[in-house]
Length: 345
Ligand code: NCD
Ligand code: ZN
Image (cartoon, rainbow, N blue to C red; front, side, top):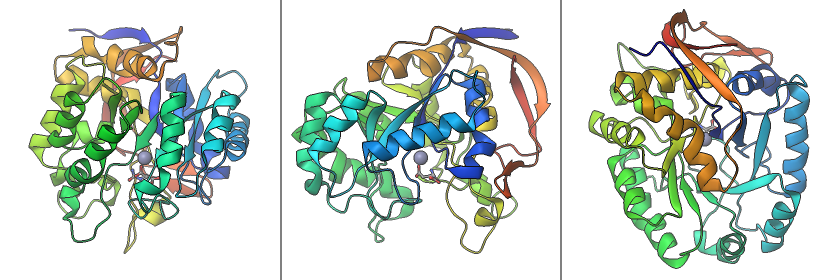
């Protein structure tokens, strides 16, 4: 049994850091574990321009101690009005790595997202030309489609046509949750990849209802059936370079989750790599963790792999019941429960 392992320092390819005092309370959790993270742009108002992304990047760095070496990889929030010239500015900045596509209304702070993908074609052409990846929240927003089917419907209605029309566009299908998404990514060209969260590898939809309604297990896309979890796990540990770590850690104040209309998002940054280690360990695939966590992401994005390392030890510890979050608190995944791997400081 492996009780300690050292891997190339990992990156988080899908992270919500928020802003202001809330961000200041959680950013260190990510910086302690990951060298870089793709920072989601769904602030209020959203980060739609390179200038806004650069200012946000500076606020992130200012919220962290000087010596972390953490590198925020910024993204722009795609709207119907994002101009091709904005893509040129993003490339010139050297700090903006990708563009996030939220179908309008799909998830938290997505109201300003894309109403019809056709409206963005000129900008997608510019991205394909420049090699800027499109990061996709892959769910249809049609209220007539069952919430558990929205990802599968998105593949047929949006993603397949998109990959056919833009053969050179790099696409990351974010936080995939279904076997249909796994199959789609495997069948697609090498320009299509996917991130997988810890919660979708650990939990199935029973976790939303075990002993009562569990708001801290609610995220979007929502947890799916066990057979989908199994498909995600199989491909995560398969060694396929098309799949990599993206936590989708999405902190919300406790009051916003424990509410008559609780919002979507699971906070996992406090123990993200530890949870992935547990998942790979339980699957007997610890040897595949480094590829998934530290190699496949930078290889897809065309960035160098990290030169530093991170050591994980098999050790029981308890996640706190909550962490400070601005003037409120955030309840993390596994709150008050055991974790089985620990990072070495
Ligand atoms: C995210 C958030 O809270 O910003 N929520 C979530 O459930 N994943 C948005 C998102 O990535 O969908
Ligand atoms: Zn997200």
